[in-house]
Image 1 (tube, helix red, strand yellow):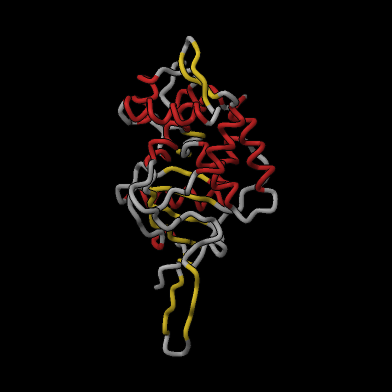
Image 2 (cartoon, rainbow, N blue to C red):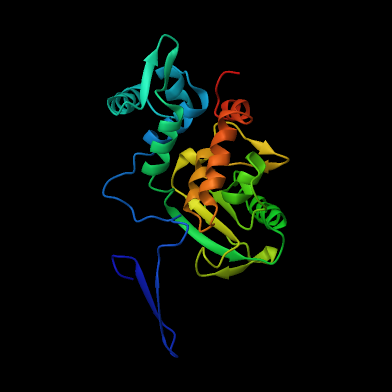
Length: 253
């Protein structure tokens, strides 16, 4: 495997070469030094619960107040946030949403890719069942399958499931494939803790990832209408889903 992500496998009958980067960009090469997940998590929470004080944002983001203060200062310098009498808020909700989507480096971690002929909803349910049986009770759903619950746009063809530790779906009848382009379900053991909301968000029993993650996975997909799907989700998060997101993010009702 080369530093630029090319893997070559000698199978005896021939040499197979494939880039390790996937179409969904779920796994990114690590940058030098630790990833500042707290910055992205703080923006997730700010979009969900604003206005909020530094104390509230520290609690909801799982970081100390000094770090919150530094991040807010940098975001203020970029004219992305502002401080009012009732706390911090986005200077422009849509502007901060777009900044997060453009800046987020991806969840990192280890992804595996799976294929099944089952309906996507059945695939997701089977995957969750297998993962729960082996201790993955904190698995959450993202991508098209989650977006369909938050802002239905079209029938989902794929699903993304995030877990704390890697696992296998072979026992549920899935077949392992080599890339996201071939997969109907992507399983990712992510490094980013912000994917998990402070409180469970269930939609008809389906545990959802933070909706900004859902937006990211939609935008990174190969779907021809990805931009439209993201826009539908953005509108829903500001209207029909705003209260549910605030509650799941730990905000005041």
